[in-house]
Length: 235
Image 1 (cartoon, rainbow, N blue to C red):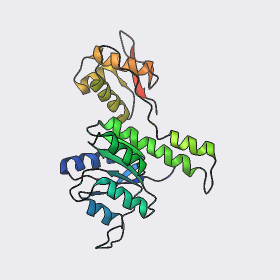
Image 2: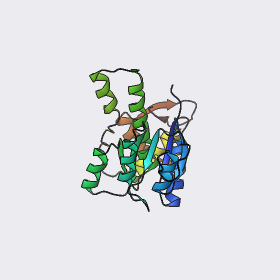
Image 3: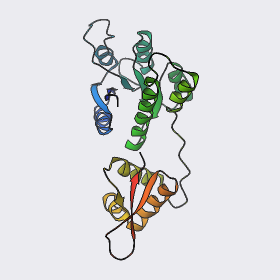
Image 4: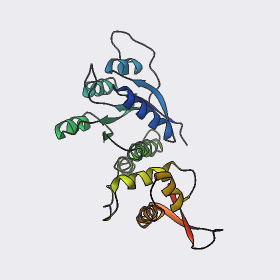
């Protein structure tokens, strides 16, 4: 297994920057390299500052806000690409206008993550990016068309299945995040207790995920009375 992917968070709002940095720390296989609050600081950390050259911080992936106080995110992206830095870039922004999305994609972002988002959505983007990197790295100095197609397919997050009537998308995301963050299987009672919902409600969400084959459902032995199941996220 390759080493952790070093992430530079570029975000001007302090609380948001801290939240994104903490998200990075929570995702297995990634580590926080640094946090930049301005475009100038980001360029300096990447070794691209014209006024004050500095020793660059080792970075594999940049989480780039588009609206910075001194530079637009696209300008930062153009400088990264113009310098030929072998770093991935994920746009993390509240900008939803389609022309901006197109410009970001054309400029070389690997993913586009719209604020606000859940930890589960954030984690999914990073894991897809890691699969993309690992897929390309398997082929050394040369590759094939099939291998390239497979690598780029890893960047594409499958669209979510429709949430059944009576289920809340927000609650479903909370259940998914809890399962992904857990170290072992949990029961409907445990999920309900942690999320502040009833056991019956928690079980509906867990059963939905099990039906979608994203969660492994197994009997929990050693309990008295009605049979109980435990649920684990499929990695």
